[in-house]
Length: 160
Image (cartoon, rainbow, N blue to C red; front, side):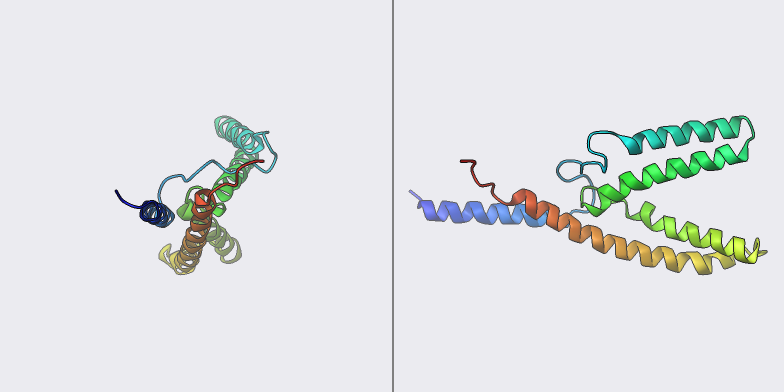
């Protein structure tokens, strides 16, 4: 009959191996969705819906201000949700989050220098910004995922 200490050690090693595998995984959700900034009120989801309605209205009636306002509101709501999920280690949104500063740089280049005759020149400004953001956000997500998995794996103290 195997000893209890040997079984306990094997169980601890199996649990540590499970945590190591889960923390290295980049795809999929881990644990419970992080709580919203406003508690149980889904403000971001309502912003996404309102932005979508305004964007459709602006497009259907050919009103650019309504279209732009709707797209901005929808983007802000989306960025809050994906940022919360990404920075808490729940789910990776690296590609989407790194595209935001790249698009901002593109808009700034077009506003400052006008519409470039060679569209490939925009890539000289956008690609490095996207790549730096991508690798920095990927690294940050890996750190947050490891912390989330470690928190969920630690044994809970019994309530007295």
